Image 1: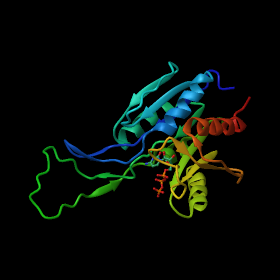
Image 2: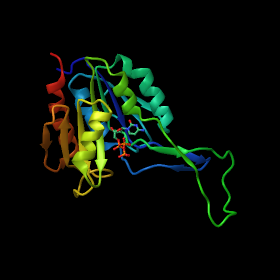
Image 3: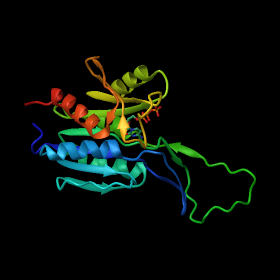
Amino acid sequence: MFLNKKILITAGPTYEPIDPVRFIGNRSSGKMGYAIAEVLAEKGAEITLISGPVSIKPIHPNISLIKIETAAQMFDECMLKMDIMDIGIYAAAVADYTPKTFSINKIKKDDEQLFIELTKTKDILKTMGEMKKQKQVLVGFALETYNEEKYAQEKLIRKNLDFIVLNSLKDTGAGFATDTNKITIIDKYNNITKFELKEKRKVAEDIIAYLTKFLDV
Ligand code: CTP
């Protein structure tokens, strides 16, 4: 079913530079996106993995890795590649804001307080949703701490997704920097499916099993 399918996956955090030695980042490990990439590659898919800085490496030869650092770089790579993709799975924890200016020199601690002005980054997944072709399948992620299902459902609609994978930080063992995850899948037909806490590889298998419902065969 996934043989020769072209699949773009985003994973990991983005790093938004402040000066030559500092950045704004987040705790994403990339494990969820990489696990999805491995399982799909084993099923014969051709994977383009666009990843922020993480400590893990892809294993399967069907995965071609594009490493980026910033949200803007991830946006550019997705724009270049998404057109020819059958499926897009957007698991990256993209920074929502980036420093307005970059200091070429290392910032000295001269002042008692330091203010860094931030501007919004482009929403990659929303842009992909606007460009989505009829046969493309688009999957997003949502990490929430309250009103989880409501916010996830809003993102699903706003970003024109087929389904969204929700992680709640209220669940122990779910979300960033863990080897396990506990997800709820909400799809565009308003189906809500809750899964047990599992190893990320097993979670990847559940997400991929769900994906098969949306493929033209
Ligand atoms: N996403 C993206 N580009 C961004 C921000 C988010 O592609 N600039 C994608 C993520 O990869 C994820 C989904 O959008 O698949 C939801 O990300 P999330 O950070 O939960 O939602 P936001 O839209 O940023 O909303 P908020 O931060 O207000 O909850």
